[in-house]
Length: 142
Image 1: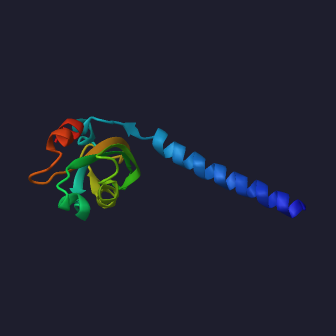
Image 2: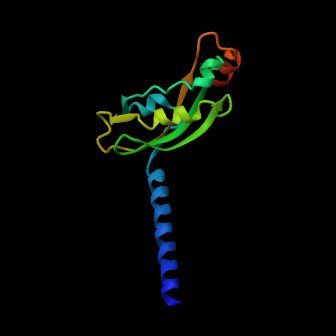
Image 3: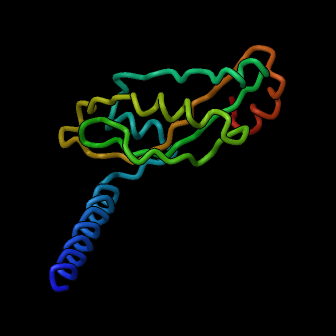
């Protein structure tokens, strides 16, 4: 019985340590949400991957967007991607997420400490003769 309690307490400490690490990473980052120019003073996009257009959305002539918050970590990789806006519905979420996970940044010359940055990025999906152009433009500012 004592071994079970010890194991449970050890697991609890291990889980709480993981949660503390994640909170520390975010709290040590510079919050530049919605300020693209400021982000570029810290990180420069080295590799930008365009998302695939979902087949059904293309066939149906649907345009839209997905906006994320994300952390650019000290290695220039995107972490903690969270959808904050998606139009229409979640139509483009999966493809946008898959593409953004492949992006890579390099530190700007002034970012010698590789300061982590919390920022936002919007990926747009547009097609010619979109059946929802006016709505997509209003929702996404395409």
